[in-house]
Length: 165
Image (tube, rainbow, N blue to C red):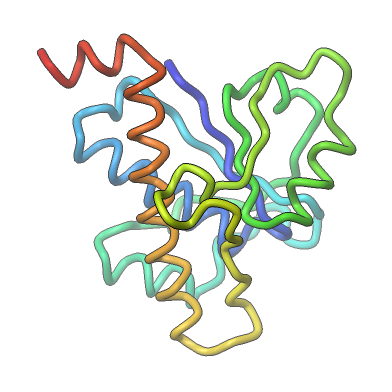
């Protein structure tokens, strides 16, 4: 089982979108039982809250239901519980590196680093913008999730065997 954590600021827009899109694409590709995903925020602003309603509407229009997700904050145990912790922007990545405990085993990187042509790019925060921002986040999460699935297939023999079988 490969475990992935997506991280943004408050865990109500970008990271739950990435979690939902990744789960959806992994399930569609037949890898749902081989990967698990979660999301968290670097801050505790929205702990226990569902994703922003605009985020939920945009995702649901693409067949991704985020309604069961609830915001949480990154905790120390995440750095050993997950194989990959993916930050939505450079600020999140820097903060994750600062709070990573000694002995952390999770690979830390930007989410879009696995998306061809989007390496080093950030997923912009749509919270203060209009509906177009939520659509852009979905587009980027789809690209990032596809890239991540490709990476996991290359790195993980059980995913490769699963896809061949």
